[in-house]
Length: 167
Picture 1 (cartoon, rainbow, N blue to C red):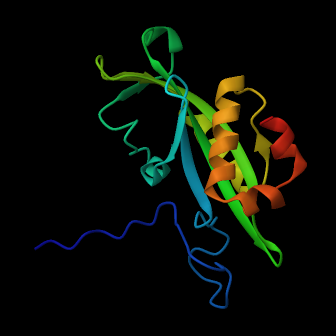
Picture 2 (tube, helix red, strand yellow):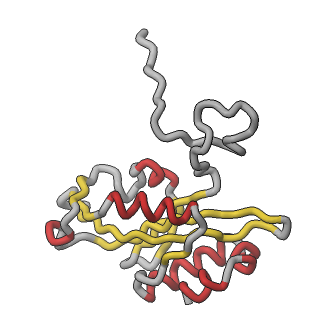
């Protein structure tokens, strides 16, 4: 059996990547505290799908994504929201929340998304930014309710920018 070649691409590291050895992987971002949350605009629902970390979510599977929204006229709208949790002495809170839009036409097996925007928003979430102003009002309410129900304490400890952005 042939041995698989070691993947030295993007590293997902647990705990402190700079703890001691100072070698391979130092300074890599930890995705341990990030979760991708999908908001289904039409259904008014939200759910976590960790497959989105590698563009393999239930929403994305089997879809060829295009960068021109007009080429997917019957696409169902979704928001992919990158949620980063920070832990402090007083408890965990939602530190970074950034939303990217996408559409999916299951029947045509086509969708619209801008991968650079998704990557940039993921990075912004890791860097504790709140970017939700461009979301539609219904989706903001769905996301706010989802985050509150998931853990009311985390919602309470979260910053005013997130609460105002989703209200």
